[in-house]
Length: 171
Image (cartoon, rainbow, N blue to C red; front, side, top):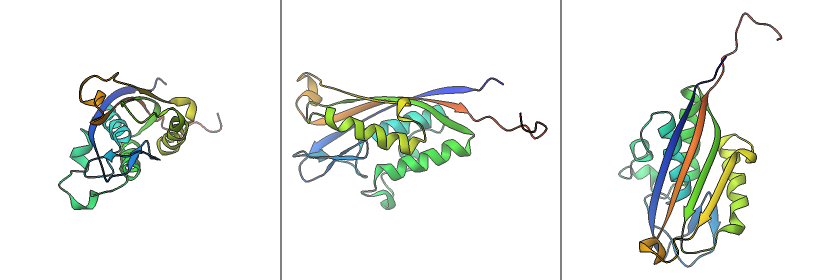
């Protein structure tokens, strides 16, 4: 039986401000600034959530977890990601793989990427060989290059879960 596959793409950007923790991919990163947002503002997880929701035709993160709802104030984006994964399963899909890019002038992210990959593999329910996270510098260009914010993009492939055939035993 051929499995039905779908692709989703996500993008998120938040400004950097003083007085907030910097969390990317569920990993706290030591830095003088953090991302401003209603939740913990983890742009990487937000982009991944939007990609997943796009793949299952369920809109975007703001539709499901609006910033006007006080229950999501300062919430960990990992919690939101787990709720999105519940929606994936409820629609009969599973994650195949995920690829993401974080664009930031600073801080350097290379040493944190393996931990991000581990966290995303656990959250998405796939092996780390199916998770890819990259970082790039905007080379001083625009608001990202001036260190005013961080942006992330993600692409996710989902596939329909195979249903077991009740007439087939032990094959």
